[in-house]
Length: 281
Image (cartoon, rainbow, N blue to C red; front, top):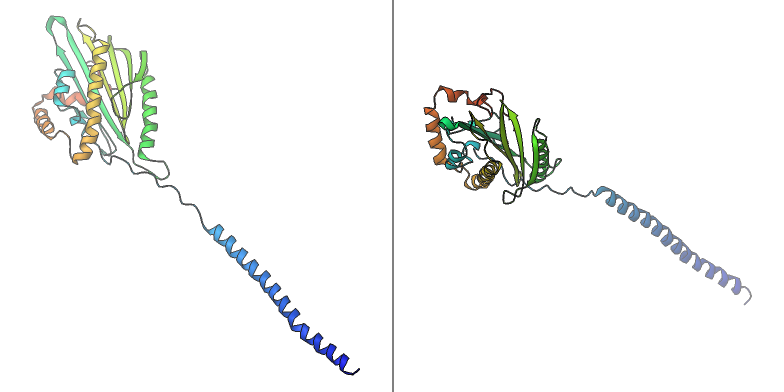
């Protein structure tokens, strides 16, 4: 009986060893798995990067012909006796991005003198760019710059600026006076934006040989009317996929062929019948 007791103790001790080893093994494996899982989680978080927001596409992808963007009747009313009825297109390396057209005319009224008028319309289009922003955002920035530039015209007098309602998504009317060639000119410039396109229209007039200087009210009214047509031409051109005034363009082309030799010099005539300098907008 006494010899069986130690033997029983040894059996119980050996039976307890596997239990302890199992416990230790589980504890060790758990720690290893924890480290692996933590590493995997950390790696997954580091590899995932937030994607940049996509810039909205530009609303307009092309520009209308600036010389047909304003109706023929409007040109006749605002620039009587225009030397080149079809207008003089400005130079551009890409007409889908930047374009312009101008008209000038001297209306001889006999003993009452002569009325001179000049009008210029310019279009600038901005594409959407992931780095620079949407076309509309870029156009809005340029719109502000053009308004500031217009208000800072050298030699301008009595400069005034105010919002111009009903022209595009936003528009500003800038008026001022300017003396040159010994005459007083009255200016009105409308800077407007529609989508990703900025339209700048300048209209002025002066009286020669004793004729009265055009009223500021008439010049402003004419500039706003022409600017509305130019803005409308952007949307109309985009919707039709072609020029908004094909018939007028054809007629103007025929008229242009009939212009005399004096009309050929209009490109450098500027905004004064006595000046050969390039006009400043």
